Amino acid sequence: MHAASPILFLCVANSARSQMAEGLARKLFGARIVVQSAGSKPSTVSPYAIEVMREVGVDLGAHHAKSVDTIDPAGVGTVITLCAEEVCPAFLGKARRIHWPIQDPASKDAAIPRDEMLARFRAARDQIQARLDVFTALLDVPAGPEPREFHASVRVKDLARSTRFYAWLLGAEPKEWTHRYATFVRPELTTNFVLVVADGKDLHHDTLYHLGIAVSDKAAVIRAFELAKAAELVVSKPPRTTWRGTPLHELWLEDPDGNLVEIYARLTPGELSEKPDSLEPTPLA
Image 1 (cartoon, helix red, strand yellow):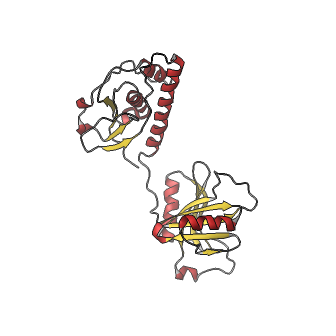
Image 2 (tube, one colour):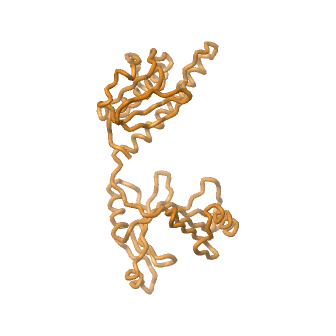
Image 3 (cartoon, one colour):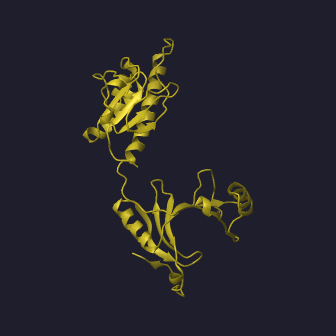
């Protein structure tokens, strides 16, 4: 998570990758962020770069390659290097550094067909765009909860077999197990990992029941709910205290792909003494 600050894209020739990155970032950020690009051995802007950028509405026709030596370090907040096989240019200053290794689409081999060259430049362009999308998503992230523990639950077909595997992987037996789940707790790893029976559901490599984080107390769960609403996140279940199984103060959210994320706090002894006879969840908001 980072604040918006002036960006400098660097590669060797400042002819393809860094030029495309500059053009894409300027289109994305507009006047919000100052964007530059440069290279350690500047040459000329590649015609292929100009062509594939025109396809996405970005004109590099007036761009020219620049030397990194012409850039004032004081005016740069983030340096993003795009070299893959080559040695990236050095840049003095206190700017934050990020490395995005993108294979150079340019080639001195004149035998490579034009269509293949365009495909190479499009691939580099699209990889840079995808990385910029993530970079943008991390700008000015709103305040969130203060996690104390990361939790994950995974559905499994064979509880005994999976428990054996994760006992090996985590180097510990589960803290507890029943016929329906096995819970591994590794305080030194801040890990709370649960295997849950599949109940006949089809499982595959993308299967995930839910993720979760522990926060300090009931108030922190309620605050997480307010923060989630302020951030316009999807709330699956508002904050409540559940009494069946492991009593928890909990809030359920959905991530952008619909995966469930639980924010929870364990009950204090005093709170546990207030358990209702009905064991029905107690709303917290």
